[in-house]
Amino acid sequence: MKKPGLTQKLKLREIELPNRIVLSPMQMYKASQHGQMTDWHLVHYGKYAYAKFGLIFTEVLCVEKRGRSTYSDAGIWNDSHVRQLKKIAAYIRSQGSIPAAQIGHCGPKSSRQRPYDGLQPLKNLQKKEEPGWRIVSCSGIPAAPGYDTPTALSTSGVKSLVKKFGLAAKRCDEAGFDVLDVHAAHGYLIHSFLSPLSNFRNDEYGGNKKNRHKFAIEIALEIRKFWPANKPLFFRLSCIDRFPGGLEIEDTISLSKALKKVGVDLIDCSSGGIKGPNSLFSLAAKEVPKPGFQVGFSEAIKQNANIATMAVGMISEPRHANDIIEQKKADLIALGREALVNPNWPLCAMRDLSEDKNFNDWPPNSGWWLEVRQRMLNSTDPNDWKVGPAAGNTPK
Ligand SMILES: Cc1cc2nc3c(=O)[nH]c(=O)nc-3n(C[C@H](O)[C@H](O)[C@H](O)COP(=O)(O)O)c2cc1C
Image (cartoon, rainbow, N blue to C red; front, top):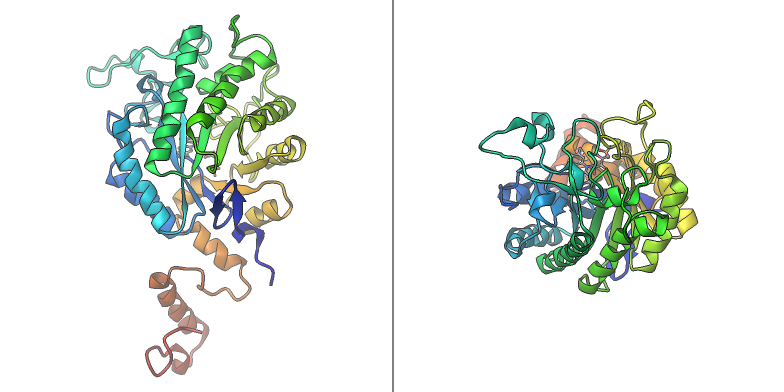
């Protein structure tokens, strides 16, 4: 039987991913007030490495303190962040997965409550223990009604942020990550420059499409000064805004081509986030997001910009994920919430997609036992359950 596409290796630059299954970046809101990860994160990401996710992304690491969405966001704005990240990356690698980091800046969506506390701007709450801070964005307009009003970055402020992305990439390399993803989606800072619905600047970073792309392009160029040439660089884009006058897939195809020219290797295809929450919470058109609802963006970019892509969004069935890869609609499949439901998803998927439905792909310290249990479930003859020297150690 041909090896299913989902379980095949993929080489990007000099980094070889053992399969096409990716843990999507997911903020856990468990970092310290200073943006430090702890051993909680080691265990959290470690369980996905045990389960053989090919590529494991950290949640977004903020390139500056001002760009945190909450007091519990993880950071990469300081050299001191490297130590714990190094431990996490090393553990992921020790299990055969590829460690990856996402970096970003929440821009007009900074300084808020954690989602499950209400997402209110901290400034409105006036709490002594968690005061709000002054937030920045492309233009001085709130991300959506109810959000805090940001200060528009000055031209020199934009240039200094470009440098911070470069330094963040350097720290991610020092920490031992092999893949880097830049968060340029979901109405966060970079997206606020890209979209005509949020960019009202009249300097070199605003106005026409080329100027709106400039911040993202300069970030990629700056990152490539520090991020080694043998390591892949991804960009997460909101492929469409879902509002009239907003970004359409054609805009994202042309941006993807431009990013490819400056050293970006893969587009991580998400959507939404300008003028409100991203597609995790709602679609502006009031449709219900269906499994794989963003796969069409990945396919369009892959075909028209001739760049590798990652599909994400409501993908949970192994066969569906495998079809997306085999039909060449994406090169990688990222799982978010389904990985929270079942951290062992890749192990289950490999078994599900295999012909004989055994546990051969599982680590033997669990797979061996499960195979013995399976023999008991499949046969009432005790001879079939025997283990040990007489029976041979490996379940058949
Ligand atoms: C708890 C949670 C935290 C998230 N944090 C991030 C993040 O840090 N960076 C990012 O780009 N997307 C983030 N996302 C979006 C996911 O990466 C993913 O794109 C989205 O959940 C859709 O995929 P799914 O349907 O498989 O969950 C987050 C999603 C969840 C559920």
